[in-house]
Length: 234
Length: 340
Image (cartoon, rainbow over all chains, first blue to last red; front, side, top):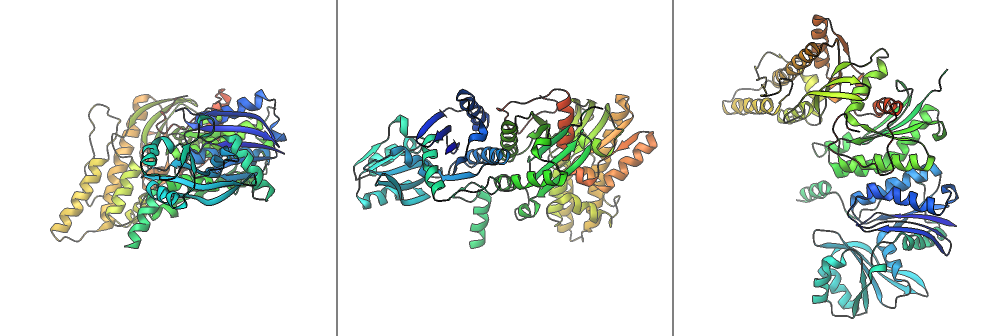
């Protein structure tokens, strides 16, 4: 079983090819260039380098959200185009779960945080149990203070990762009351390989679909919809 | 006999998700348009984020419908053409990323197309004899350009709007007289019941370039007129306002276009873009062309609105000229005409 994985949900652009328990190639870039310009050339690079026949791929995994709206759509359009042209299924993996997968078998509670602007983070809580990733709290947009309060209530040691860490590190240090740590550089951002590994779980449970039907999960309405809903509520 | 060239064309620069299959640039095999207009009506205009979300939802289905209705599959396609600017960046990116992925996965050439050059090329689809050079007046909700088409891939901009696009002025005036969005077709319809000479709205003079346009002054004049009527308790005849406003726009567009054709020593004038389906604009320009002995070309309304057949037409000629884009093709929201 060979999975091609793509993550362009945040600042990082990452592509990987994973075959069963082997990571064949991964290309991850954390640089200011737009994903629109980098994602496909990166994919082409690893495909060429590893002499991969695109038709040998069994499924295409993608970070389905949350994340930057535009970034999610660049990833989505890319896998929808690939999936359509190659006639391959698409596995949409929740972005925050993909991040959590980086912390395999951590004994601490895993708390990825992505900067969601407007003083919020996209986050979820995860735990490895019996070497499998369990979702303790599914991904949501939430205020940082609220997240810290709930972690304090749980009272467990927690490990933070994600592009929200540099933004909220000082707030966390100031307010958190449980044991905590921040994941190191090689596992604290989106990695398409980790996303692919999580995608295998989805595949085994039959949780995949056609490229045509795939849409990102933004976890947020557009600003115009939000303002309209607020107006109607009044 | 030379081999036929089939282009799969994708357009997502604003609020239509459109895909077409074109044969040899001028023959339409399919032209599928999914319009989001009903969705945006709620907001009185196009909401970029909503447009982008709808594009990603619909794009694969529209592609498949276009192929199916053309009786083709991907293997029959020679190149993928896609609009990469100008337009809403988030909306453009959906089409661009999708087109790149399909081109990459199938090993087919990728041809990026300029949206306005697409509108101009819409004229080739039904006018089999039309060839450059000719003058083209491009008028839409986002653009007002007077373009000298030197060759299929070579353009000279003689005039452009300094402020609002013509279609934008239509939308704003339509809103002011309570017609709603989109304003163009509604004003066109109501104008037929009004007197275009009832109110003498100003024709804007623009300093510097005689071919440039300005519509914001006209829009303000209409708004002032409406305010004054209200203050003086004069009943407003909306049909007269619509007709007089529309005539002021059309008059300027026609005059500039005709003068541009004359001064360039050309004999052919084409129109393109959403506003080109305005019936009064067509009649006025057609009449003026007849008077001047010029040939007049215009696309059917379906090719005036944003569509992908026109992108396939422009893409075909770019393809013949050897234009190829790489996998790092980006959406360029303010792409200039003629830029490669």
